[in-house]
Image 1 (cartoon, rainbow, N blue to C red):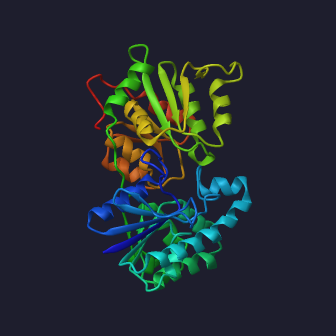
Image 2 (image 1 turned 180 degrees about the vertical axis):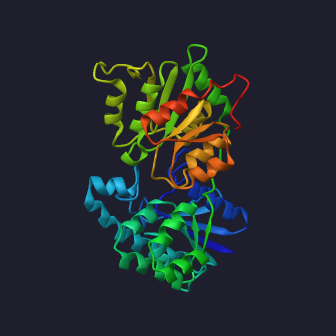
Image 3 (image 1 turned 60 degrees about the vertical axis):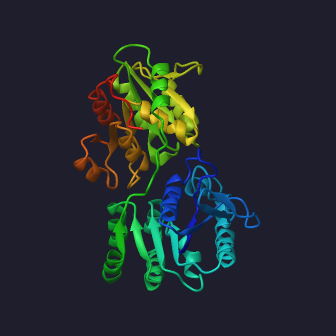
Amino acid sequence: MRAVVVTTSYPISDEDPSGHFVRSSALALARSGAEVHVIAAGGSVLDAPSRDGDLVVHRAGGGALFAWPGAVARARASPLRLLAAGPFAASVIARLRAIGPVDRAVAHWIVPCAWPLLLASPPAPLEVRAHGADVRLLLGAPRPARASVVGALLRRDARFVFAAGALLDALAGALAPAQARALLDASRVEPPAFDLPPVGERAEALRRELLQRPGERIAVVACRLIPTKRVELAIEAAHAAGPGLRLVVVGDGPERAALERLARGPAADGAGPARCAGGANVRFTGALPRREALAWIGAADVLLHPSSHEAAPTVIREARALGVPVIACDAGDVVAWARDDDGIVVADGTAEGLAAALRAVPPRRSDRAPAT
């Protein structure tokens, strides 16, 4: 069987966190015996295909828009970047023609990745995976445009896989009743796949490096530093939680400078780790290779996830796979996850609510090592 996967996000190396769940999904397809071709944003349509383990990767340009810290943030910073979407779609079509007939097609994100596959000839069974940003984009579009996109895919007999039930419910609720029923019939909910490298030894080394006194605790936030992640709530919660807490912010983005100023407070001189007035230290690591970012999560007494936008945050599932408790805000399917996992606490979406939850987290026992 030959399969093609179209995506706007795909890692350029094993340590690139971008689109790692797309890679995990494609590798699972390859392990089932398929010959898998991945068409991904970045590079140029003129670049020769490359090997990524069992996958063949074809680049299709569009990097001006589809790159860190995300298409929405990049378009907001420079609206002209939206012009890259058209050439990307054209390049995907060119790549599809070069690959030739396939037995299965998978689009990660409803828009823009499913559209080139609608034009593929001869058509192959089409699976469309919705992750969140694509659903929010459709929800913000005019109703006729939203209905047109979903209708075209349904007429193509596409099957939909939503990362969270909340996404499916939101999109179905924004459609006419008949189309909503058709979408529900064609859909299932399945959180994205992910793979965890071994990080246990590095996690324990980071704890030894950071903790200085008995009873101290580490809270980690791991995300892109953009407004919807609400990292400022984590910093304010660390301030309110009192001394003995060390907050590590893993990631980078356009909000970093403002967040660093918030962490230092008005009287700080800007040197060394930021220290909130309440005594909590705040360390910003910047962007890290995926393995190192996971090691920081594994080193934590608790992962803080203050975002109110993500319907199925992979970082929460990674933390739980590493044995790390999570404090999160009500978003998407997180509340449902918490009902089945007492290691996830859903806090009030305020700094005070997060601080109260943080104060209830005990220091990690020395004999409790990360699961991986």
